[in-house]
Image (cartoon, rainbow, N blue to C red; front, side, top):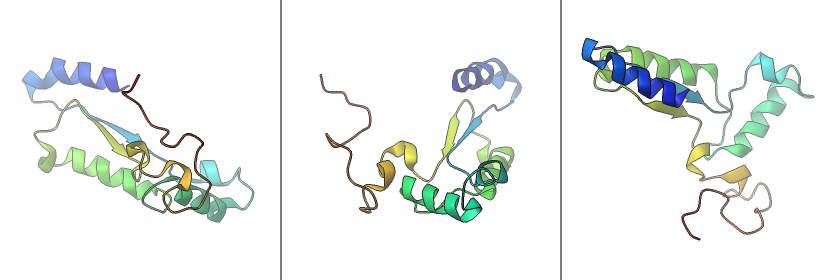
Amino acid sequence: MINLTRSVALEVAKDHIRVNCICPGGINTPLISRRMPGGEEAINQLLALLQPIPRAGRPDDIANMALFLASAESDWITGTAMVVDGGLMAGGNIFGQQRGDVPPIPGGFAGPSFES
């Protein structure tokens, strides 16, 4: 989806059409919470452990990004993947490690490595 977004953005930029995508993180919606024992509250607690911003994502978080991208304030933004995930992809809180909520992953950092 990200590559398609970039490709289409390049094709239509000459016509002043902007194309971006939103990459959501863990969002607590009924689709998820109705299948989990404990429901919405259990999902809120679980998702709060996974992100550096210690709370579950809300549908409004994604809607706010969509509103921003549709607004004049984003007039110079095209071909981007806007990650809205409470910092999870930044790798700052892999499974609650920074707050000590869960034991550390053996071997330390679990993100990408540029070492051989």
